[in-house]
Length: 180
Ligand SMILES: Cc1cc2nc3c(=O)[nH]c(=O)nc-3n(C[C@H](O)[C@H](O)[C@H](O)COP(=O)(O)O)c2cc1C
Image (cartoon, rainbow, N blue to C red; front, side):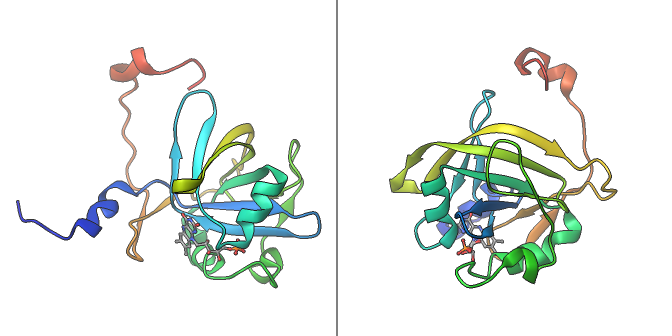
């Protein structure tokens, strides 16, 4: 084993799916890209990590809601560009040719082009680490999309596309809750 830079630790830990988070400030829809996400329990809580340097942060904290959407592999370039653009003066839905659909429980929109969208309410915030704890109120899936691959940020500007899927449900049966 060869010692490498400590900064590279996250490149081994990070690869969850990159997500698009929508918000609505009462005037305009916005989207941001987030790669720092985490599922934390079987009760519908997830965490997104962000902070006041993003326009979306203030909107999410004020409205106490957002939608977490999962782009497929064909959306990778758009997803990176969304994460390189501020929504302060830009309508990202228009600029990136995405379709906003109404959600049921929140004002923030779904993104029609994504694999799935989760309507979420903010239930907690850990300021020190920028953890916004969300409760998922509703999930919608776009079953018509052929390309089911998600993609994962390594953290250094490279991405991993989903590959083969293997099933170990039998082995994990005792730990899987009903409905999964
Ligand atoms: C691949 C990628 C991943 C990103 N992940 C995060 C993240 O996890 N947390 C965060 O605060 N910003 C992240 N960003 C940056 C925001 O998406 C970016 O600052 C965006 O412009 C915010 O938009 P807004 O100011 O309109 O809210 C990421 C950007 C890219 C390109």
